[in-house]
Length: 426
Image (tube, rainbow, N blue to C red):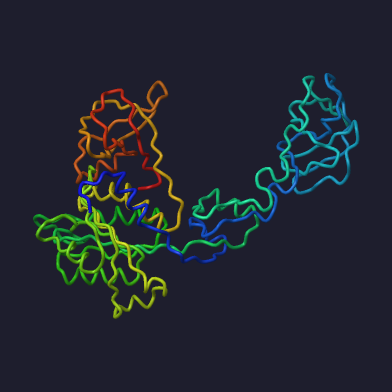
C-alpha cells in the first residue's frame, strides 16, 4: 500500500472497497424511522389526490371571467377540507373554500379571502384581477401515481418518513441495521471508576466514537477497553467478528513496540495500514477480519449471512481528536456505504477567516473552529485555539471544522476558507 496517502485518495479507495450489505427486512412504518430504504418506493397514489385550494378564499371559474372588469359573484356554498361541496359552479357563481378543500367542478381559480369584499351572499373580486389557475394545487403535482417517491439508500428522516406516511404505506423495506463493534486498546487506558495512576488516561474515545456511531443509527457492540495483551486482544477481535459487520478500534495502529494490535489484525484477516497526509491523525488500519470463533456463544445470535462473511475493520489513531476526525472524514462515509445509504460529499460552506493560519501544502488539515454571523451578515470563522490532537476540549468548543485541502498553503486573515458544520454528526 502506498504511504502518505492524501485524504481524497484514501476516501476514493474506501468508496471503491466498501459495498452495501445485501440483507434487508420489512418493518411497520412506525418502526422504520431513521432506517435506510432497501429499494425504491413507488407512489401508489397521486399526491395531492385531487385539485385543492392552497388557501382560504373563494373558488370560481377564472378562465371565464371577462378581462379588465371587477366582477361580483354569487356565493353558493362552502367547501371544507375533507368535506367537498357537491355540485358544479356556474358562470357568475363562487364557492367559499378552505385550505386543502377539493376544487369543485366548474372552478379553476381561488382568490384569497383578504383580497375580496363580501356583502351578504355576494363577493366582489379585486380590481386587478386574479390570474386563472391561481392558488390551486393540482392533482399529482407533488407526486404522480407510479412515480418514484423515495429512492433506495434514502435515510428515513422526518420528511421522508412523513412522505411515506402520506402515501398510506403500512410497511417499508429497509436495510438491516448495521452492527458495529468498538473497543479501545492500550495499557494506559482507564475505564470509568478505576482510580488514576501515573501515565494512564481515562478512555474518552470509547464515548466519542460510540456516540457518533449511535448518531449514524447503527447497533453498537461496546467491548470497552482492552489492554495490550495478545490473548485479550485476540478474544476481543474474534468475539466482535462473530457478531458484527464492522469493528472499530482506537489505538495500537502505529509502529510502537507494544502495539500488538497490528500483528493480530494481520494474523486474523487482510488488513492494510495506511499513513495518511492528514492532520490530526495519520495512521489508519483498513481491512477485513476473516477469522471467526465458532466456539463463541455470541455467534449463535448472529444471522446466517454474517457467519460466512468477513467483518470490516477500521483501526483509528489513539489521540482523541485524531480519532474523531479520522472517523468523520473516512470511516463514517464508509459505514454509510456499508449500511446501504446514499453517500454525498461533505457540504462545505465558505466563511471569512478572522485570522491568519500557517499551512504547508502536502496534507489535509481539519481545524476545530467556531463559525458565526459577522456584523455585516457574512459568515466568519475562527479556530478554537491550540490544535493538538489530544485537546478534546477544543472539539467541545467547536461547531465546525475548517478544512484546508491537500495543496492549500497559508491562509491570510480575511481569506475565504471551506467550513464543515459538525451539527448532526457529533
